[in-house]
Image (cartoon, rainbow, N blue to C red; front, side, top):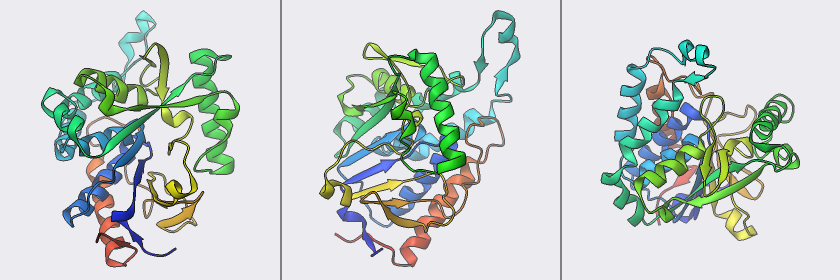
Length: 291
């Protein structure tokens, strides 16, 4: 593909991926250090949406430091004592909301609302015939089948099973708490985190439908879209074209556990890889930042 002029990107999509999304944070932090500006339209799901929100709030470093502190204070993923009350108590249920509260709060919410970039947050709506539990099971099965057999960036099986993706503009939220709820719904991956009631309906992790969510686009809109993946697809270059869009993937598997939130989780390594990949792509002339 020809070199990409980042200033001409109109839509920047943040794939989900748990801790792997710190690669996106490192990459964009490095690009911004060289003068890059966010495009007018952002879209993301799961932790990718939260990373995008941290850039709107101008608080990505705060988000990284908060994540490191919360993980350092957490020794276990699961509280076995909850089983005596027939409860599944995963650490994510408290760690993730606490993390969001550090950078999507009243102090940062005005910056998010006034940011020149608009963020669409993708969530999954359950299939009517399956309900919430059945939809989560179907989405998990579809994810495993696609991961092992098809390796599609945008899988078709979840939609075939009736799962639907819905998009919510973060700037349409009227309070920081409402924004936190929207971002929490986008990352609610049972059993780690329970589904969330969002505008009267159940919502859960948007990655169950499409881990790299993008609303319907025209041909010209696709041509000006850059998707930041968090999963490495062997055999594909760092920057490649597909589905009429441009995709940027990590140079190799991001060196962090996707779901771990205990002390020792290497989020800083994921962040550093993003910085290194951005620096390498700039040095190779694959991306230009000039207007």
